[in-house]
Image (cartoon, rainbow, N blue to C red):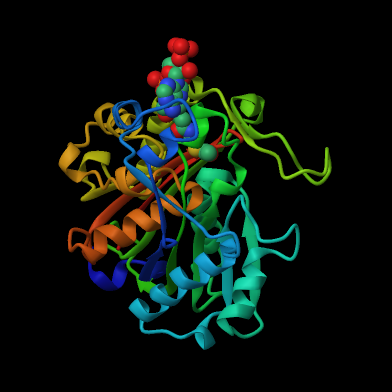
Length: 331
Ligand code: ACO
């Protein structure tokens, strides 16, 4: 086919990425002082060595703003260019307004669209898909998609089965529309598969909320069941996203999964036939930062020089809901 016969389509292209972690580090040994656990157990079962914890006066919007500023700099943009902000978070500053509106104010971005997406650890993949609906239809010229969490605020610090797993942080991407040829060689978001199964709520949830008991609540989890569900179901969504994009799973350059547990990352990669050398893992350093973990891992991969423009990336996540999903994109 001649190039001019190919249909030109708008693609949502990531033009900048940024990550931010709070200053305070909590090691496994620190946690062993408050619950009956050990560095050895945590490393062997999860791969986690440390996590970051936001200060008491550090709301999730501050983490989001710091990540967003780095992403804007990387994209060569300023807050004045932004017309859409989506924040994927489970740990909003306030019940309302949306954290995205608070981020807009703190960044000094002009009046535009700003809202939050709540899909727990899958939030960033969900938010990318929602943003694609604006950017690839010409309804946003410059969008910020942020995953930001203060999961440590939801911990029951007497429950060793959960409090060792989570950390705080934020990652952000700038998305801009670019003309593509409608082929898999195009830069941009190429394919998605999103899933939710509300019947699995009891496996992973927070036992508080505005409309039930009015409390913030604590995270509750049946860890081994979540583990099983993750390894089995994520693979299906990844294959569906790859099919949606028109690529083979094994052809991706980098697999950038939600960073819940090193054993889940490896189990999913093995099931999909992805070589472990292609997996970006930050779980040892960051622990599970929920919706922030994928953009944080992407920022890490870019800053250490592994992930480069033009490469094909596979993102996937699973979280409370249960929700899960995958995205294939060319950077
Ligand atoms: N230190 C020491 N022992 C522990 C700890 C700990 N921190 N936590 C649990 N144990 C004990 C349990 O009490 C249990 O002891 P028992 O046999 O005496 O009863 C034993 O270890 C085994 O417990 P399991 O839960 O079966 O251990 P498992 O190997 O499944 O590992 C883990 C637990 C790490 C939680 C694992 O199941 C997991 O990672 N699951 C997935 C969790 C996850 O990814 N959640 C996030 C999803 S994303 C989101 O939306 C928030």
